[in-house]
Image 1 (cartoon, rainbow, N blue to C red):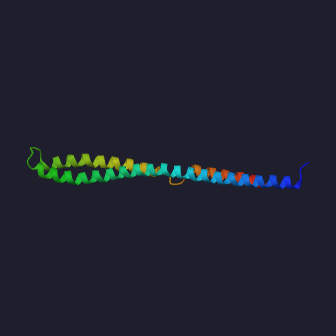
Image 2 (image 1 turned 30 degrees about the vertical axis):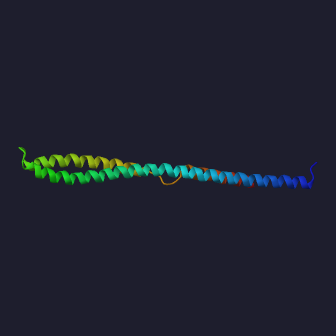
Image 3 (image 1 turned 45 degrees about the horizontal axis):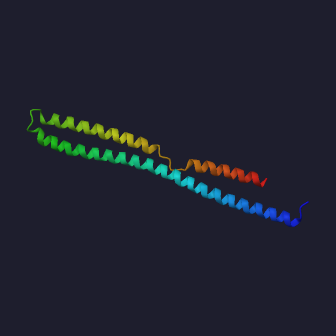
Length: 131
């Protein structure tokens, strides 16, 4: 048979262990959230790079259109057609980069889904303990 002191000590130890476990769990959840946010930041960075590439391609369209008009005057081909062909190629490259970058940017999820799910599980576990 246990004495009241032993029961209180056991209860105190149990409460201390629960506190330690909750603290450890909280630290793990924070680390998981950080890892998820880092992953999403990498995705966003890649998508932003593609959009930057699309902007550069747009700049090249303007430069090459101007150069094509200048140098097209001296070529055998009609100057307008030569400039139009070069511009169409750069416009297609820019459009492809833009579409690809925008599609990747839409897949970026800023919410740490795994952390939210495990926090819900932890809350359910804590509710079950109180019962």
